[in-house]
Image (cartoon, rainbow, N blue to C red; front, side):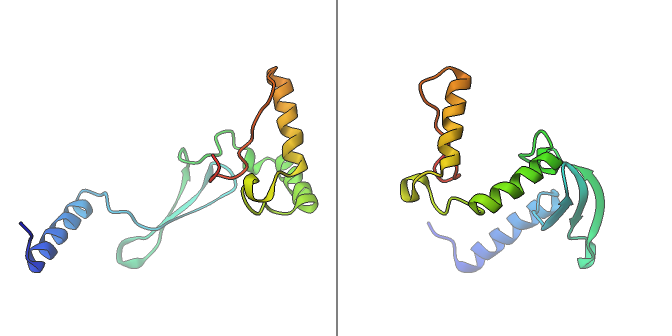
Length: 124
């Protein structure tokens, strides 16, 4: 049995009200940080942004290396040499020599025959 259009709209409105009322409505957030500590800005009441300092436990930067000066220097050097990305997956454009070198080094370090990198999220 299908709902009439008006019934459907009322049902959706009720579901959305439940989500909002339960504090589960997703809003835009901006996290301005260099590392795990920074300023979180959220959509505040009446459209006025609300800002507060937070420590993020939701990032993939587990060790805080994105803000480490040696990592930043190495990244700048890599960009100057190889650009800002592979351009496509390894099956499309092939590997970069730096990836081949790292795979060999990882295999030697782990004592295995081979190691495989997935330099694109799509390939992983």
